[in-house]
Length: 254
Image (cartoon, rainbow, N blue to C red; front, side, top):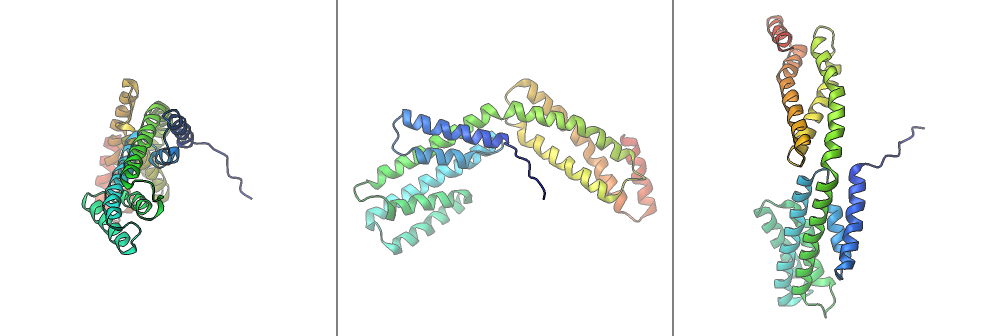
């Protein structure tokens, strides 16, 4: 039976820190519902601060849309099933119009809570306002935690991995006459993953050293792009003349 290694990733640790911080600060500020702050922090947490901003923005805007529509419709007839359906339709239309499909779900949750869930003695306006502020607070915590704990560690790990990977890339191009298409695809998949990761972290790093390191790696990775594409064409082509041209171009690029 295969044993699955027990690994705690950085995103897991960041999420745990964000939740603890959300609840602690909510209690310190005497917020009524720390749950919503912590939930937003969990949902907004991602691999990079930039992605956290995107997810958090969807959550906050969705909460705001759901709150506004909920307050308007609840003022007409709270609990009305027909109005509830129309309200969800309006939220979906607005979110799609704003090109924010990620806001639909949370907007719907807040809207339904205002329409049918909250106690009659709770004012819909203040409920919606508090949920929006809670979401904004949770998204901000997730962003700060991500920005604080992510860049240096991730860039250092990527730096180490790429320094080990470059020799494999060079060997791949040097073995033009012996490498199989299957082996090439495996190397190219790793190459693409490293390139995507470097681009992902590029806008998140703070320190000058990390930024320079990423830029240097991006320059090196991009230099390999055309030779690798030519090698793929070389391995898949049946035209001997084209293969000869590609072979010479790949050798010249080394």
